[in-house]
Each structure stands twice: as structure tokens, then as C-alpha cells.
Image (cartoon, rainbow, N blue to C red; front, side, top):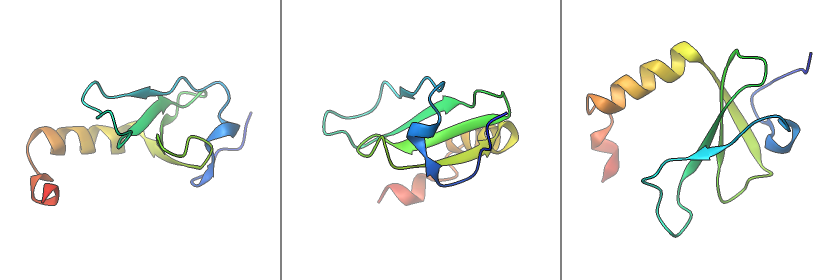
Length: 79
């Protein structure tokens, strides 16, 4: 089993299938997400730096974020 850790190079997640939001802009200002190969959660990376670090989150953490975003909890961060 592969050792997964926060900040690991995204390229080490070779089995990950990265995807962007349909709302990403043409300037590449977006993040990409992928389910972790072992099923434990989700990896997130900067689309402008696909070889850079990946942040890893559990399914519960991703669910809390998505529900908070839907509820507008982070709207104040949009400037």
C-alpha cells in the first residue's frame, strides 16, 4: 500500500484521475481533485502546478467543505 501524506508530490498519485470544476476559468485559476486510489478520501492540487504538492482530505472533511460552500459559509472570502 502506498504511503500517503499531506504535501506529497501530486505526481506520486499516479493512479489518481484528476478533475476540474466546469466553473474553472480559462486562465487556469482553479484546483483539481481526485479520489485517492485507496478510497480513503480526496486529493487536491493546484492546476497551475500539477507536479506540486497534493493536500489530502478525508471524505468527511470534503463533505463538510462542500456543504459549507453550498450554504454560503465561505462567500465572504470571494472579495
